[in-house]
Length: 98
Image 1 (tube, rainbow, N blue to C red):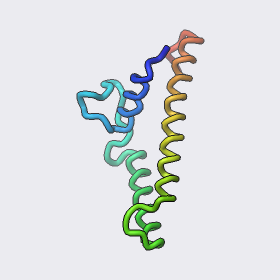
Image 2 (tube, rainbow, N blue to C red):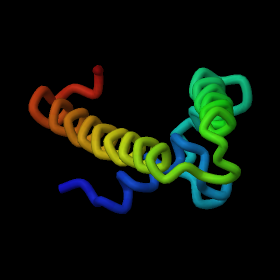
Image 3 (tube, rainbow, N blue to C red):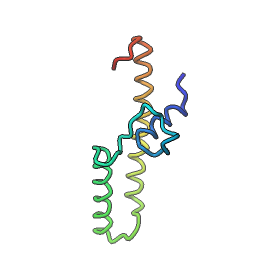
Image 4 (cartoon, helix red, strand yellow):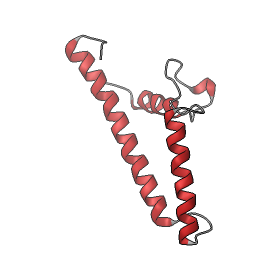
């Protein structure tokens, strides 16, 4: 069985949210400056700021926060399950090739 803590450490390492000494060393940070994830995240923040301006909201908009947090929750569930599927695939096929 896969340790949930390992899955979480891998997920957090991919996001670049762990301090360097806590990162899983063989997992790359997908949010390095200029990376596709970094650009997409910046685009989302820019769009959120424009939306708040249109709505006349100075700080966070409750509904937009629900949308963003729900999508982040879905992303985490999918990421964790994808990892479990990869482990199961390797176990079933005896292969490390994906």
